Length: 203
Image 1: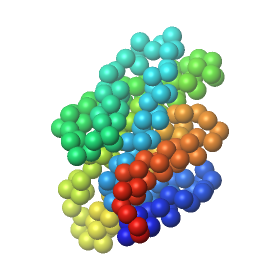
Image 2: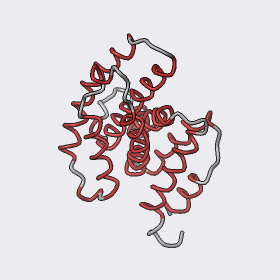
Image 3: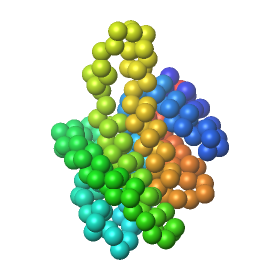
């Protein structure tokens, strides 16, 4: 039963080096579980995005799509049955365009180390939220046809693993805490338990 297997995986304690693998292995329980992890991580990253108030904020930090995608992901977690995929897809596509400009700006920007760190963490937050949108929107139809049938099946089975891992990893960096991976893992654990385990009955 999904509850017992998933609960065992969530209970695993791990160091930072094993965090990506722990997130990747959520693919064993399918895209809804992965999307829950991604949406949750994106919400944690949002605070780093909103907190940026550097003197250059108006030069690169003014896009509205980051917060819009984060809001839609929050609604998806709260009420997945009425998830508005059309609105999320549109906002995620706009955010992808804005990210190109933001990345170019941050790559060239300079300043004191503390300012650069805060700027890079804000960018990581936007990247986390974008990957959260992509993970939530993922369907098997998005996997391109391949001549290698085995690889094709493997990509389908992995679901949005790349997007989910990137979302969670960027959230860890964005929040900027020494034990950031533990903070993100704990939030993922709580969200998945609430959605997929708490109401599932005995395993």
